[in-house]
Amino acid sequence: MRRVLPFSRPVTRPEFCPNPECPLHDRTLARTGQWFQHYGFYHSQSGGKTRRFYCKYCGRTSSSRTFSLHYWTHRKIDFRDLDDRLNSCAGYRQIGRSLSVSYRVVKNRVLRLARNYMNLLDTSYVGFPLTEDIAFDGFESYMRSQYIPDNFNIAVGCTSQVPYAFTLSLFRRRGSMTDQQRRNRTALDAIWRPPPGDLIASCRVVFRDILSIYLNRPELSPFVLTTDKKPEYRTALKSLPEWRHLRELGLVEHRTVSSRLPRTRKNPLFPVNYLDREIRKNSAAHVRETVRGDREVTMTMSRMVITLGYHTFRKPYRIDNRTENKDVQTHAEVVNLLDNRETQEAFDRLYTKRHLWSHQKLKAGWMEDIWLRKKKNPPVVCFRTGMVPLKGQPGNGWFARHLLE
Image (cartoon, rainbow, N blue to C red):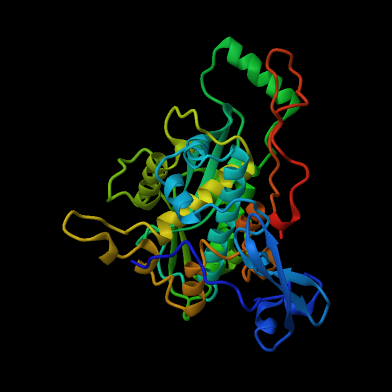
């Protein structure tokens, strides 16, 4: 099992120009020549003595902190330690009290760590041949309160239990309710309702991204997608021209099984059922009857990225009492996700380097929703008055640019 260090060497050569309009913003082009010159140093209380750089092409200046995961921060936090805490069922407030930082600081670092995991996944999937079949199902939880149920639609490898993609769908509360709960739901319905067909649209994004990885196979061999019998899954698949074309060629098959079957290893949906258990026990936001649930769409999706990324790249595939963990393969190593040099480099820089959306190669649809904060938060509604308070609303407005690039 490969280990990733929480620190990096001092930056003496910038990897790219931070100006998006500059041709040297491209990492590949920036490696080809001496496009920068050293521009002295500056000193700050948080970063100490910091080297500066000057781009000869566009004149933009930068520093060694520009390329660090600690860019634009006043306090350094060990991201590996944060990753371990998040996947040890610790809540945001618990982590903040332990590290003596505010929730806002923890939230900022969670978003940074999630983007680095997405960069690692994006790098891993470039040219990666999907050699296993996929099991697909939804993981049901809730966001903020049980009046806003959500569903993580996760595609998992049948052999490796690697989660390859996921999206989030929000629902309207359903099931048995008291009269007061129905009145509360009616008050929320008057202000906000989930978009119609959200589940079908979300599943379509995952299926398209999975098919794009499947097409990396040197020779297109038969591929099986297993789901339960929800009609939305079949509708989403039929709406994809790629799926229809591959099905006409006899290369892909959609198998359905009952969701009421015992959740044993013999169940074709065992990979997603196994992952459901791992999420329930390792993520504080999804423990049964938890009081540590996520309250914002971007935060709940970012935390799920970290949970699934940790499961893929750091968690041992199988553990027994006779083997040391350092000698056990991770889920990623089972399917050789870390075999190429670029992926190994991205893994080694997981807790140190800053990555930009413009540098991602695949730009998968499910990652774009999270990285660029495309999903909007449902408003907080006062059930007593039926109004939307001005204070205490989740943030849908201004966001720091360096957290969106």
